[in-house]
Image 1 (tube, each protein chain N blue to C red):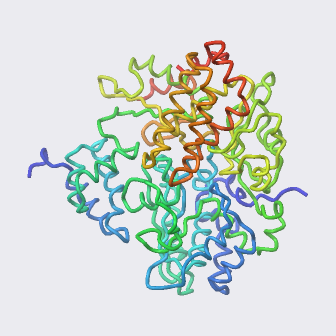
Image 2: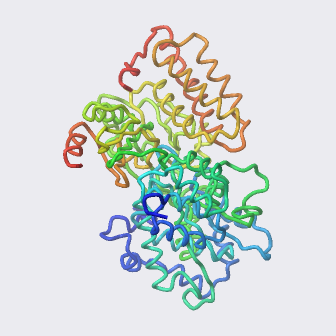
Image 3: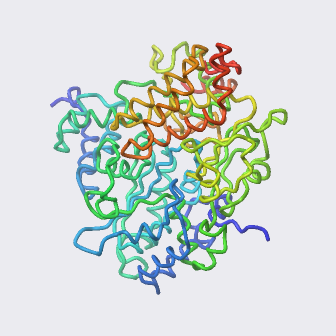
Length: 429
Length: 160
C-alpha cells in the first residue's frame, strides 16, 4: 500500500504557507473537533495513547512529558516551541515552518489546549529570518480567523502565540538554554532537576516541544490514537521526516513511517550516492551529535529503538552521508570545530575538552600527529562524557569515540604518513 | 539631546519601549531590543548596549555578556553585504571551503574582515540548517543556496 503523506501533504502546493491553502487541505479540522467536543484531558490522553515520541532528538514520549506538569495552580503554564533547529544535518522543521506553518500552528493550539496553556512561545533560531516572517504572517491570519486570541471558535479557550527569535547559538536548542534565552539571557543550560515541567519559563510550569512533534498532534486528534499506532513500528509510531545530505544525489527532507531502512532512504528517496564511482563510506543517521556508522553497518532501520540497538541514535534524523573520498579525521575535525565554537563555556570539561579535540585533530590532519593521539582523543572524550550539565558534552564525546573506534587505521595512517592521505589539510584551505 | 549624540534614534527607542511590555516579563525584551538596535546601526555599538541596559534596568555588563554570547549580534560594523558561508560538515562535503577560498580571492580579504570600501564582509558560520542546499550561505537576511565559484562571481557582480 502506498504511504499517505501526512506531515508533507501540503508542502508541494502553491502558496502552501497561506491559511486558504491550509484550509482547503483540511487544516484546522482537528482544532474544530477538539474545541467542540473534547476536554483538554481527552486530548492529552489521545496523544499519550498514540505513542508519539519527541522529534527533536531524545525521543521522549510527548504525552508523558505533558503529564509531568503539576496540578493546576496560580502560576500560568507555558508551551515553548523549540524551532531552534541547529543540529548539523537537520533542516526538517525549516521546511514545515516555511511551507506549512498552519499545520504547526494547529498543533501548537491543540497542545496548548491540552496542557491548559494560554501563552505559547515560538522560539525560532535567528538565522531563520524567512521562517520567522512566514510564521508571523500565519499567526496574524489565525488571529483574524478566530483560531487564536480570546474565545477561540466560541469555545471559551484563549491563547496567544508569540514569536521569539534566537540570535545564533546552537546551545539554545537545549531546552533549558532555550528558556534562559527566552528570558533575555545568555543561553546557559540549567541544572535538572527541577525539570521545566515544574520550574520552567519565568519559574512557571513549562513544556518544550519540537516543531515536528507538534505537527503530529492534529493528525492524532483528528484520526485517533488507534489509527496513529498503525503507522511505523511498535513503540516507534507515526510518520517521520528524514533529512539526508552530504554525498547523495538528491539531498532533502523525505517523509516515511518510522522504521524505514536507511538504504531505502538513501537509494530510493535520495537517489543514491552522488558519484557512481565513490561508494558509501560512512553515515550519521541522526545528526552530527550521534555516533557514526561505517558502511558495513548501515543496514539499519530508522527508528528510535532500532538505531539505539545499532549503537547510535535517531536524534533529529539529520542524516549525513559520506563517500569514499571523505577523510574521517577531517570530518571529525570539522565537527570538533563546530562544538568548540558552540560550547557555552559553562562546564569546564566541555569548554576545555572541545578545544583539546580541535587541537589534536588539527595536528593529525596537518601531518604533525603523534602515535598516542587517537588514544588521547578517546581519553579526553571519556572525561567530557557524563561530566557536564547538559548533553552537549556527549554530543561531541560520542562522535569522537565512534570516529576513532570505527576508523582507527585511518587516524593511525595520518601519523605514520605524516600527512592526510586524502590531501585534506590542503583541501580545507 | 541632538540626533548626532543619541545612542539610538527616536524611532528605535519607541520600538524598544513597545517591546518592554510585549512579553510576560520585561527581561525577555533584551534580544528583540538588540535586534532593533542592529536594524538601525547594522551592528550593536557599546553606547546603544548601555542605552538598552538602562531601559531594561540591568547592568551594561549583563547586556555586553548577552551581545557577545550570540553570534548574530555584531560588535563591530560589518559590510553592506555580509557574507556568511556555512562551514559545517554537509556543506564542507559539498565544497564550502572552495567557496570561501573563491570569495577571499575575489574580495581580496580574509574571512572575518571587511573590504576597505565597506561593501563586503566575509565570515564562516556554523550550520545554517539548509544542508539540502549545500554549500549554502546567507547574505544579510537572505538564503543563498548551492554556491559554487561561478555563482560567487555572479553574486558579487550583482551586489553593489
